Length: 180
Image: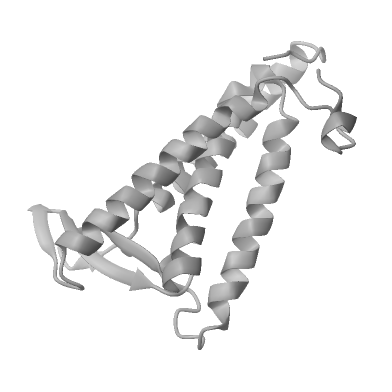
């Protein structure tokens, strides 16, 4: 363990925890790049069918997931931006203090942080989140989403799997803290 006081933290900082930020950066780059391509190549709200259940459809979401508060008048832009900043600060702290043997959890945290920062960029710069992935079956359409949303969902699923199946095993293996 590294001394947490060197970071201005009360908790220990585990060596290598911040190495997972490469995954966060990769998610941000892929997300923003794909949103830029979608914005350049797609016509707003005009579906481009790729598979019987999958379209590319450029949409803008000023709200949160499932267009929650999309028509709230504009204040939600800054509210959701502040929430994203707070969540990312908490996730970074959690990542810093997670022992190396919890690599699965570190990966989930890095994915969630990358997705949150990708959507935060959109929200601050554009005033809305760019969505373009549209899944459907028959007449049922899932709300459009993007790669950031995908990373957040996968990261959250990893954290749930970790809590359900790995956390108890890690505690049973002892309380010594790994470094790296």
